[in-house]
Amino acid sequence: MKSVLIAATVAMAFAAGPAFADCVGDIAKIDEAMKTTKLDDAGMKKAKDMLDKAMAASVAKDEATCTNNTGELMKMLGITS
Image (cartoon, rainbow, N blue to C red; front, side, top):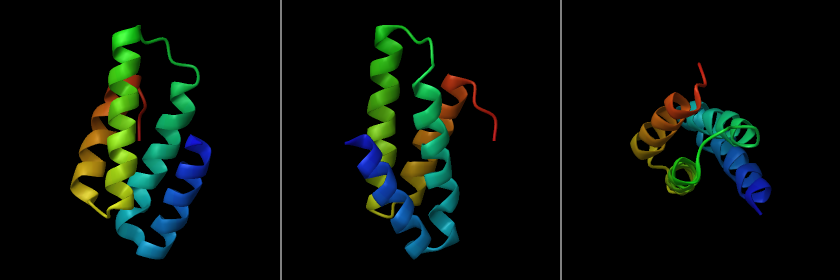
């Protein structure tokens, strides 16, 4: 299900233009990193909630919210740009 949502988000980003390209690209990086991350249960729940908010913000074309959530998640997961 998340793969479908991510694919839809990526497709919408290309249609919306470059403003959301970074956010959608970050969502894809985060999604991959979460498959192998070693967070505790509370950390994983927080990460999943933030990822859901970022994806919803991306669909709603709310770049600021998407960027804020992905930025914090990338720090949490140790992802560098």
